[in-house]
Length: 80
Image (cartoon, rainbow, N blue to C red; front, side, top):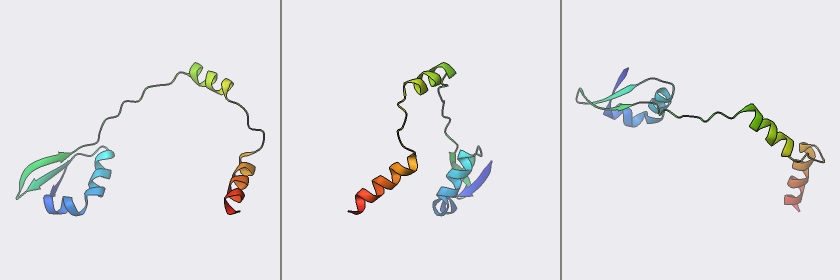
């Protein structure tokens, strides 16, 4: 666990959040006394079964033209 003073925590909050999201716990101190901790949030992901994915693919309509052509057409419409 890393320890950081409150002034440094203010100056480098995004870095501390990145460290916490990577699994590290960061303790914030004020005048040498611990006042807070930054820890990563635990997100639970629902697993999707292979049968569900296959069913989704079977119901998806197929594109008539390649994606690149679609992008070019969209871009060119916006120009004129």
